[in-house]
Image (tube, rainbow, N blue to C red; front, side):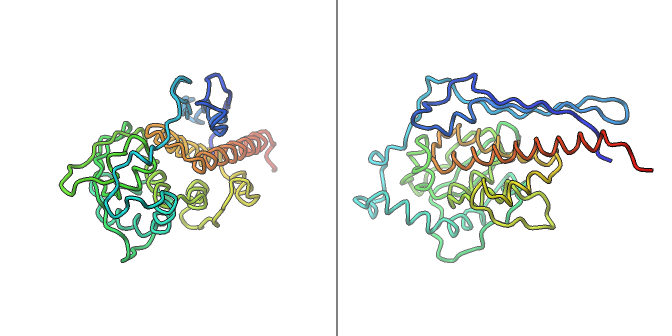
Length: 287
């Protein structure tokens, strides 16, 4: 029998979002916290689990990637950036697979619940390595990447656009190791479906159908049918993705819209799940 617990949920905007006129998606994630206080059936021990979303102060403005300032490879100079981005997106699955063949250090797919892309022989080779340390892990990650993909996504990584072949690994410090696989996959695939599938896969034995939108009725129903603990784990994963994106100043509108929708769906599912558990706990057993 699952142990009983109570959960307090708050979601408010006590902190100003980052330029909400330019980025309305930020308002939902301005400040949101979940605290879970449970009482074990034996020993009356208390447990607390917290998930917190918080944004930098309002004075920190959204910074876009300055495409014109990027030092591109000679073969790409003069090529429209829209064309470059479209081509990178087409090659994304193949490039992602090529990076994961050479991973050194931390387990890249620790906690990952979706299959990585299959190997593709047509993938351009990685141009740079990242030496990533995480605030929540003592295990670093040495990850080969395609510098231009990262340079076009984060204004902090502009120097990766055309790195020297002899450049040392680029040091990077991120908040969440457990959610890095989500962030890394998004960088290459830019796939709402892949992200939502990862956030809505609750068992290894039953593959989750692909969902293209957080408002998909099947996805909402799936989340509502889960136990609170499973939904809390997904919210914690989403929190890590959010914190990694903020750390690198990634203001991709599609990513933020997807995180916003996924957060709402998971929280709605959590509320339904909690009501169901409270109802089950108050029902008298049938003799």
